[in-house]
Length: 93
Image 1: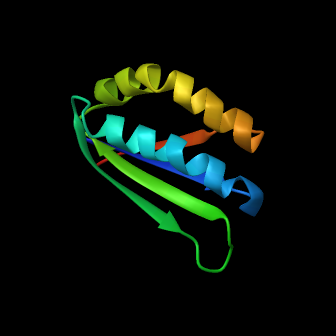
Image 2 (image 1 turned 90 degrees about the vertical axis):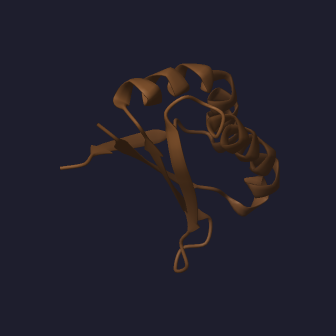
Image 3 (image 1 turned 45 degrees about the vertical axis):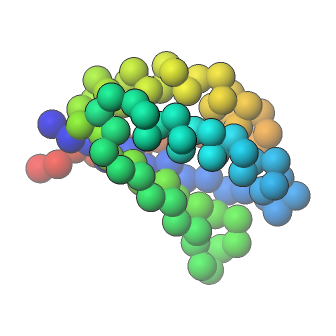
């Protein structure tokens, strides 16, 4: 069953440029992973610095495998932003 992953981040203006290559790396690698279907990134209009990433995976197992592979880059992102990234996981009804 396909799953949607929601990632919300607040990126201070002074860290946005340093974050860009890390996020681009994750996006490029994700597109090569088994089970990856799609991904979208949104910037909130009324709250500068707030973003939302929505990715779709063929299965929860595909997502879990990707979480392991992305760990090193994700740790760099969390360190840069000063907080752990949270994930919300949804399935289709």
